[in-house]
Structure formats: C-alpha cells, structure tokens
Length: 239
Image 1 (spheres, rainbow, N blue to C red):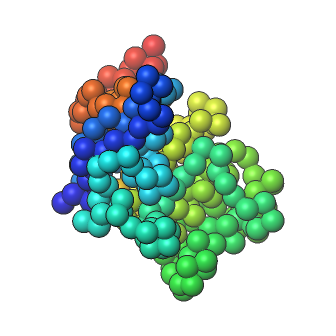
Image 2 (image 1 turned 30 degrees about the horizontal axis):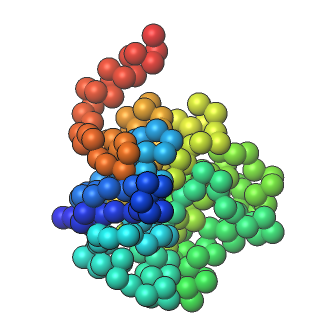
C-alpha cells in the first residue's frame, strides 16, 4: 500500500537565465513500512525533496500525497497540524530543547498537540534506543550519538505515518553512524514505521530497503537492496 506519493513535483527558484530547477518533475511512490534512502551530491535536490515530502516547503507545481491526503493543497494552519500528527523529523542538528531533559524532549511534540502520552509505547521506544538511563539528562550532558537517539525517539513518540531523516548521521563519527542507523532500521521494523532518509553516504544508504538516486532535481536511479548486496558491500568495507 502506497503511503507517500509525489506527482510531477517541481520546485523552481528565480526566472529566466537565473532560474534554478531544484526539483524537475519528480514522481515517487513509497510503500507503507518501507525504508527508503535518497542519495545525491550536494545541490542535487535531495534536501528540497525531503522538505516537500514533509510539508516544510511548497512546490512550484505538482502534488504530494501522504496517506492519500494532498498536503500541497493544505493551508498553513491545517498543514502544521497534519505535519505534527503524521510526519516525524530527524535532523542532522538534532534540534533538542536545551533546557528540557531527555524524557521531556521526547514527549514535547505530543504535549504541544494537546494529546495524552502513550506511556507504554514511549517506554518501548526508549528501551529499544537504549535511553532508559538518560531520561533525566539534559542534551548538553549527552554525546552526539545519544542526542541523535533522543531525536529519533522524539520523532517516533507521536506514532507518525512517515519518518523523514535529513542526513541523520552527518555530525557523527563512522562507528556511531552505523550504530544510530542500525537502531533507526530496527525501530522502523519494530514499530512499523515508513522511513525516508536522505544521505550522500553510499555505505549508510545500503542499510535501506531501496535506494533512489537524484541529480539535478531528477530521479536517475531506483533500485531495491538485497541481503546479498549488503554482504558484498560489507565485504568490500572490511577489505
């Protein structure tokens, strides 16, 4: 079942000779429960695409459907509510509130929406991400990897339809990156999340179920990753 669909999505900046086509007719379909990696170089359009998928920016033309809802047609207030309830974000910069402890950061979006925290579910997410011993800590008392785990827990806590991850390991070392992405994949599978991640790191992308390659605002490649592909990549890395 398709949970995310784009229809001829375009985002242009400027006019005439100075016009930049950040997205130039992107058609994308994502299945419920899928872990998709979008790979591209700097300036390829991958960040713009993620912002469109999350309703953080408006397209020049085309449509974005989340759970059959055309979010590109929503007014600002309705879009804000929809985004808070249906879409979870994990950013490279973590975006944790420095004066709130780990638990308060995790449940903040739920409380802002006026909803009751599903404590049993949140406790499971916290346990899977290995944060039980850090709930009273402030972000400044955590390592980069721990802060990113908190950001993932916060994104999962509201039970979003889609989790969007923007270069989630960009500020982490290689070993911590693998750990965090492994946890992201495990939590996605355990809690039935659909994950769309952008990255420029080919090795990180191999953890996904499927990789899309984007350059100059257009999708150039789309392929599924098999376990054999992963093992071959792992062997190359070991060498």
